[in-house]
Every structure is written in structure tokens, then in C-alpha cells.
Length: 482
Ligand SMILES: Cc1ncc(COP(=O)(O)O)c(C=O)c1O
Image 1: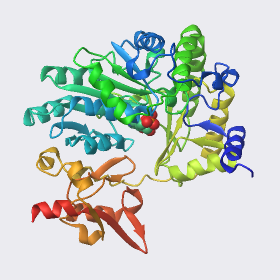
Image 2 (image 1 turned 180 degrees about the vertical axis):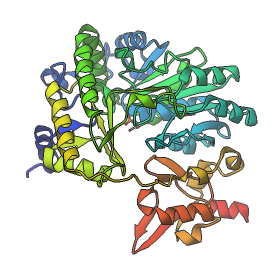
Image 3 (image 1 turned 30 degrees about the vertical axis):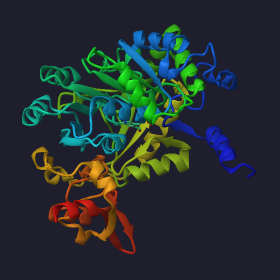
């Protein structure tokens, strides 16, 4: 290989059937391979406007995007939803403020808390026992937390989840509006929602104040292309742009911005693309619902565990009734069929489908899953021990250190047994479902340590070396306590 990364990428794109992001699936739609990308690669010269002070051509494109998404203002992001999430949080909170954070938040949220010196108050999403995955946020639980913490500035939640499960944003926003709190929705996986009524309605339409979407995940934009929507008049756009400038590049990519504009225009013109895709997707889901041992995540989940709606573009397949794990299923799809999925978790896989998938692509995935299914042995699902009962509840996280105090206070690595009573210097995450068992700033307890010892392979954020589990604990927390 002469240029190892470049050569590998070209080979990978030629030989792999992609069921992962980015949503253009190597330029399979809208003649994307023909687009003169280098001609779009300009900079802030006269006539080409400026993202952080958009007045002209960028503003015009952003306004068209805002009309499409039903937002008051839409801002192009060129460093992914990550930058939009951090900027949103920094724009509504001052140092020392508190924010309600759903515990299944993306890790960028904790980075924002560290940068801003903001105190999290956690809300646990519901757990769905049938599929053993995380569901939605309960509006009543939210109201209780706001009443107990009237000083909070607002709330950030993830909807849809990675698996495509949507919370009741309308009910949640009526609570945040009642108490005059800002609702930020991380809709990173929902940029396609407004394009067809077969998808859930976007949080922009359902009362959220700020909504962040990755156009590169579920639409055919290139990686890092995303949108930040201001959906109500309670947000100060100038303040938001200031925060954004702190976390984004000072050379925002015109390729990304130009392509987002192009995609909006082309998809609006070619509405039948969505209809064709949805016919194929529905046929695919109908077939997959007949798998014998593997199990498709179906629409019937709505109505339980605070799940209001489901995004059918996410093809989530569970392996609990079989003799293989999700990781093994993902491996078979890759090794035998050259199909790469988005996530291989321990009891399920997520295959991301988008408008770029042809009938043939979806059939290839379906045929592979049926062939695998035929060769699997049936097995009674294990009772999966989810750490829900030992995840700290919201009352106990009130008077702890902020993520910023812990981050800048120094840390040391200790054996897991020596961590009891010490403060975690990072998030210790149970995956799946991807929820912190211990968040940065919280203490290790006997129960959490026992849980980590029982299921070390389900835990992210610990070091497993030399037959020993080690974790990072805070020095600062100990000093302050002493
Ligand atoms: C729920 C969620 N939010 C935010 C992000 C960050 O998105 P981006 O990659 O566009 O920065 C991700 C990335 O996977 C995500 O899954």
C-alpha cells in the first residue's frame, strides 16, 4: 500500500455493503459522485458570507433550511451534532448553574458540563423489559425533578435514541414551558424526520427550544454536517453563535454547508425518492418480522416505557433467543456477507437504512439475516442484569462535585476494590444500554463495584489489564472532603 488509509478507504467503499453512517452510503444517491466537491471548497471571501455572521448567501441557505424544518432559525454545523450540543448547553447555562441531563446522553454533554462548570441533575430514561433496551423520558418524573430543583436552567434529552425510540416531546415540552425551563433535544438521529410522514414528528414541531440534528447520519450529507435549530423565541441567537464559535473550527467547511443546501433542495424536488424508499423499507421490515429466532424491534414497542414513537429506518435485530451474541451476528454479516452494520451490541445489532439504500441493498441484508437465522440454534434468553436498580437516583446526586471540579482536580488509577467511597473521575457506562452506572463526580459504592465485577465486559470506562480491573478516581474530591 502506498497511502495506507486512502487505499483502505477506497477498497472498503467498493467491497462493503454499508448499513452504517454516513447516510449517503458512499455517494449512492442524488448523483453525489458527480458533484465537483473541490469546487465547493471555498472560504470567507467577499460574496461568500460568513457562518458566524451570516447575512447573505449562507443566511439565505439557512433560512431555506429553517422553513423546511419548521424552525425560527437554523444554523449550519460543520463539526457535527457534538458542537451543537456543547454550544447549546454553554449558551443557556452560566458556571454554577444546573441542568437536567438524561442519563443516556451523548458524551458531548459531559464535555459541555466540564467546559461550562455546570452541575448535572440526572433523569433516568425508562427501561423496556421486553427488548431490554432504554426507552423514553417520563414527563411526570421530569416535573418532580424540576419541582425538587427549581433553580435548573433546563433539560437535555436524547430523542430518538440510537435504536430509534422517540420520547413524548410534546408532553415533555409542556412541562418545561410551564416551569420556564429550556428544552434541548439531541435529535442527532432524526434529521430525516421532516421528510416523510412515516417518520415521527421532529422535536422542532413539538415544542422543544433547541434541536440538534446530524445530517450526516440519516441523510446523505458528508460526515460532520449537522444542523442546530432554534425553535422558539426563548433563545438568544447571538449568544448561541458566540458559544458555537468557541467549539467549532474558524474555517467552517463550505463543502459541508454547500452540500447540506444541495441535499435540501434536491430532496424537496425529488419527493418520490422517499416514497420509493419507504415502500422498500416497509417490505423489508415485514419480511424481517418473520425471522424465527432473530427478532426485529417492532412498532408494537410504542406506548410502553415512555416510548411515544419509533423510527422505522433503524433495523434493530435482537439475538437473545439464539446461541449467538449481537457482536457475533455483526461479525458473521461482515465476514460472510460483506455487510457492515452500525452497532454490534451484546444482544442486538443496529443496521442503519437510509434513502441511499436500493431495493437490492435491503434484499441483500434481508437474505443474509434469513440464511443466518436458519442456521442458528434456539435458546432461552438469559435474564439480563441491568444495573437500573443500583443507578443512583436523582436525589442522591444533588450535592456532589461538578464534572469540572473533578476533571481539573487531578486523578489517579486504583484497583476497583479500592475505589469504594472514592469519586469517579469519568463516566462508567453499562453498554448496552449505554447509560452511566456512575457519572463523573459520583462515588463508587459496594453495589456498583460488585456490578462491575460481575459484568466487566458490559462496562465501558474501566481498564481491564493483568487480570485486574482498574478505574480512575478523583484526587480533588478526596481533598475537598478531607
Ligand atoms: C445520540 C447522539 N447524539 C450526538 C451524537 C454526536 O453526533 P456527531 O457525530 O454529529 O457529532 C451522536 C453520535 O453518534 C449520537 O449518537
